[in-house]
Length: 202
Image (cartoon, rainbow, N blue to C red; front, side, top):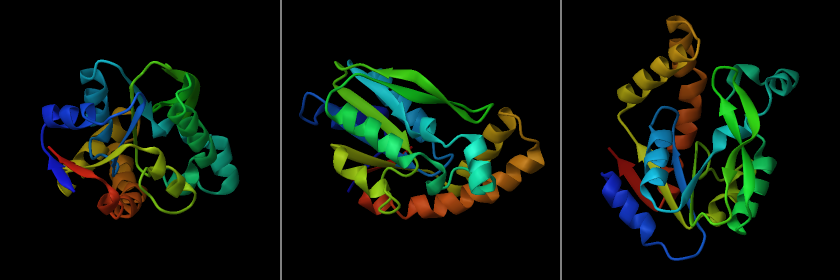
């Protein structure tokens, strides 16, 4: 496992992966900065598209129905089958309109993110890309290169609280969520780091 500490190094590693369609996984705990890293990587490559996992959150009404709303973000609060279906189509070189995610409404936005068929690199980012259970284990074999983003714990928590406040939570509610459901998920996610080909530390 190699350690990457700069965007230039990351771009070079991905650019050197052979193939007409390259799928790259950027995994990490909530607040680690994987969305930022993935966005910077996609922007720095000449032919790349971005596919965030967040668009596959189950609808709020379905989470309430299942009794899972109070732990939204856990592995079983996503449409794993839908995510895998899109991932396989992207792997096959198809053009796909993937769902986005509205952080204010906390709902998916169907078809918000077009993945063109001529994108050589598709950067996929999300929490559970390297998880080996609950159906998520079917994702890892579809990637050509996998990366795990690591960051100092206190920095990650501070980022999470700030983000939750920015999207509508009170400071107290933001802190409770960051130290509660987010932290429970983070411990599970951080255990998957060993399955990555590379670690990103910035």
